[in-house]
Length: 112
Length: 115
View 1 (cartoon, chains in turn purple, cyan):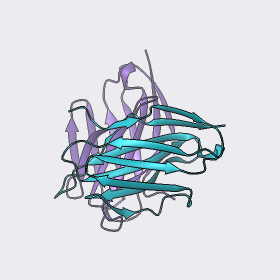
View 2 (tube, rainbow over the protein chains, first blue to last red; view 1 turned 45 degrees about the horizontal axis):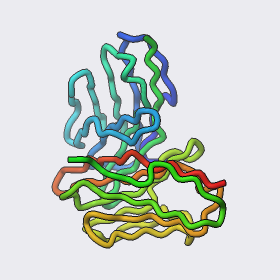
View 3 (cartoon, each protein chain N blue to C red; view 1 turned 60 degrees about the vertical axis):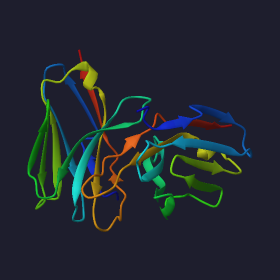
């Protein structure tokens, strides 16, 4: 299976609620990134967290990394309809030699 | 900066025809990636280049697919002959990989339909 696997596959919430998505991976990593993909568009980089970091914030985004559990979570607070998109995690490690390994993504729907 | 530029945005072709997808990475970036995305298989890395040299083409499905990067500002992905199962959205992405910088910048994609 892929290095990064997102959970859940799909998530539907009301505007204003928080959305939490999880990513699990199998091998040791150098960093983990989250990307967003709006329908019909390319992926957009959101945030990068390094293996020696545990938490990172960017606006309404909060990312955590637990290397002991090989997992990461992306929290979007006070969600908006415009946050409706697919979210992917991607990992970089010494074993994948310069390329990021993407998971299958979580599809988030925020209802107005 | 205009970002990563891909052409064409949409391509409809008949089975057996040659298809060429084009990509112009962001100026100054030293790595370029070709991905394919479908509902069934998700996002797949086909090949990536570092400093114009192909580093890993293990994701290229078969010999019908080939990719080139003749210079730092241009890359092509060619499918010859095309088949209906090649229908997908093809993304090009570029990044500046040095030290701890890994962010990839994606183009808008080329939606390929092979009939």
